[in-house]
Image (spheres, one colour):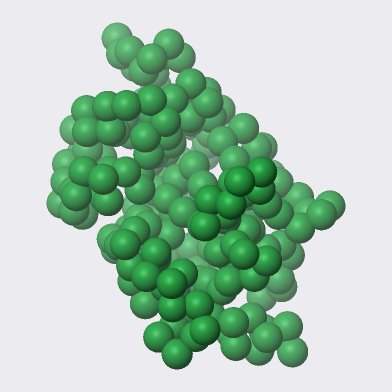
Length: 219
């Protein structure tokens, strides 16, 4: 019943919230990704259900209408932070992994064809340890926001994964030059495409001793 209820709320051309659909399209989010992630619209928010081995464990809510005094991101009360979205899809997809800082960036990156994930709770959340084994043998790129919180979060995520898989921190600041700009800005504001993003991953990603905390300077 829960799954059917979620599926009935998926945003599409026939839904009552076509203005929300237009906002998603303006973010270059396509219907295929909306359907894949079962994106809905509840309590004036873009809702991303969080599944773990078939069980709905949380719902991430993004303030897509930018309502004043409403948090940018919200989750179910008492839900864990550090859960992977969309875990049930990602665990069976062994293409290179892109870890984004938030749900919106993850959705945008997936719409561009990337195997993108994010964690509930934001950049400073701790990855739940039972997920670590799923990273073995993978190549992972951490692509967080161009600000101090994003840089600290990327370093945190790198340290969690460095002994598990081939992990790199991608630096998008050559395109997203302003403070707080992110993956969404890369594709939407700067009108870049998947090939441009692959170029960043291949040429501006760093690991091991080359990562330094201050402003992503590299040795």
